[in-house]
Length: 411
Image (tube, rainbow, N blue to C red):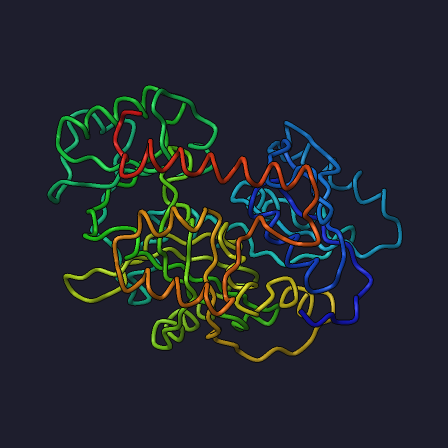
């Protein structure tokens, strides 16, 4: 990839997961620089890497005072440097929104205010905003800790059950916990609610109708909005497979980039109407019953799978730097280059994807060299990373064999 002149800045990424690695790879591809990271712990995705180093681990980082003190202290390690702060998880995004005034001056970043984040981050509020802007979404109701016993969904089974407050849910524990559940009948529905509310999670649950179709019905859209609150980049991905492990359900494992101008312009108008800035990530599913996209949720950050955008030739780090560091005037770009992005082995894609036309498209892109395996990056390939990568691929094969299609309250 063509190198650009490197501005004098250092990316400081919040987290240590696959999203962090994807952003670090974007910065490295665009500018040839190594990122640093600050997080609650160390995860395999960013271990033994030459393009990102987790330099500060603070288990209590989700405490607001600890968050601010840690980052202000960390900034003192790099006097005179422009530090570009990039949250790579919902928890870090919320922390930054709440504490942005205390960190300005020490870091450069883009961030919406806390009231807008609350409006978009809690799913009940988000669906209200969707209605106001003409987006379709699945039939949805809310269950609470006070009302869950005997709760009757106002639509037929199967139904989806997921937390309204993803940060609180992430921190709770109970047997057979999954990121998202699908209840096939009443008895399974009751068992799932009893398990969730038997844990420390006492916030609302979102109960939704199940949109027919497999993983390939899902779409993911990543956008970047500039400091002027105008949309600068829109990129759409067509999901081939999601992850199916308990902690990974709903996370994308293989994506083919695509384009839909009508959907893109609708999203542009929505983001500009609400005055959004920074990265935004949308999950949606195509409903074959009425041929519409049903919007599931919005993440106020780049998505975990967002490297598919960089892989298609639209480097996310460059959009961020051009806007926040260089203050460039950026036009709207709607991504249309082709790429197949994946975190899983190719054989898993071809074994578990049901749609034969999507398999043919995947094979065509691989044959043309338009294939990107996120965790296989030549400048970051050496013995430890090589072994770690291949072990992860073996583990993915095992997980799909054991967990594929299991979204109920059992292992």
